[in-house]
Image (cartoon, rainbow, N blue to C red; front, side, top):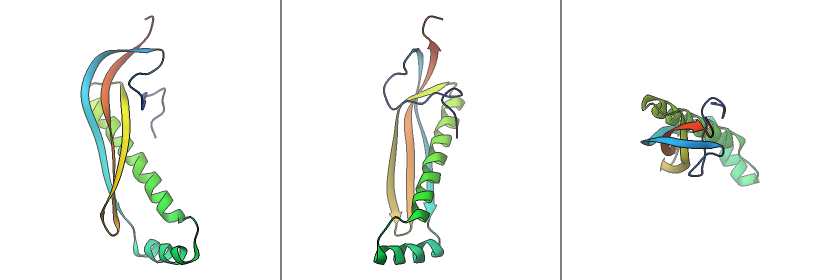
Length: 114
């Protein structure tokens, strides 16, 4: 996963102690994941018994990380060094497929006072 020092990402419209010097535009990263048969069987049993379905939690965390990484790659391709207004969206495509989308605004930032 990309570190904040390497490539700042913010869910707000700014990044503290930095000024935006150029707006590069809309960027996104998308991934679609399918649950495996083993996960579905385990989830079915958990559904009957109750409790957290750890396989699905891990799948969604991996999907989130991958979509953010792809969004960063898109921003770098545009010449940006940060993303502001980052958002995540998720939706089911079918009974066993999940889409995760990361999107935001690619910008060029500089430390204030430089």
